[in-house]
Image (tube, rainbow, N blue to C red; front, side, top):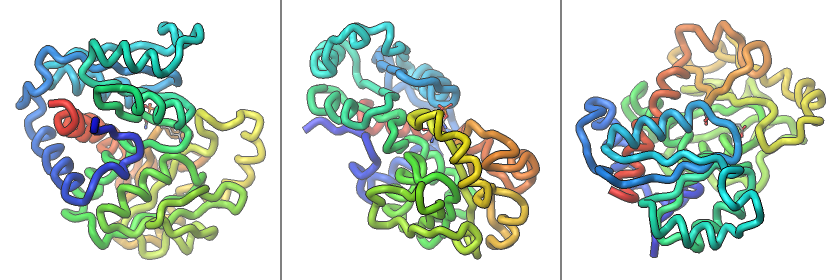
Length: 292
Ligand code: CP
Ligand code: NVA
């Protein structure tokens, strides 16, 4: 059966550990592997991206491969060709298909019919490549993952779900504090759902947040969300109740003054910019594992 990476739940503990170890090697020697020489990887974007686009594209080139970046509106998908037929055709040309789109079902459908690996570059429900980078960042900081506590404060969204799936697999406690109306739906077993952001952050090794309005959310809910999430802002006061060594994380893009203060985003306790860099290293390790 073809191996895909749609939610992170495809990995077991040993595979995740090997992937992170390989990512550390690739970070130390970014041009040290030619595992994708002359292989073409399709990168399909249905939604905007800065980090995912750049980290995949550069990472594939570093591995000796060719990233074929397309927007869905350039494909016949936008004129009604089915996901199934798209999967059949792309599988005959490329070594893997990476896709960012809203609907999780579209990505599952692609994976059902593709004969090459499919990688989820973000859907409404999941962002597993982000969670891999989050874990690498935590591992670099603390030298381990098992036993760490991460407090995610804010919207119970794709980033929170993926953090809980992969963090749980790595043996971390993942607390997710959200207003009742924005709780994580269908939470992974490992997620500890809470409402109080201070209780969640209390004693945590890392405090993590994400945007209050995701790409798949109805923009008309922005105002309601802003007031609901105000108590969940990641600021110095929230960091004060975390462990003295606690770091601040954010998957980016950030809105300083909304879900995070500029003080934290650019301060000494953030590991947010290295977290953004780590996307490239983990995705290279993932591509090697699935394709190389
Ligand atoms: N974190 C993340 O996926 O960023 P982009 O939306 O810029 O790719
Ligand atoms: N939750 C955000 C993550 C962006 C990287 C979104 O889906 O828009």
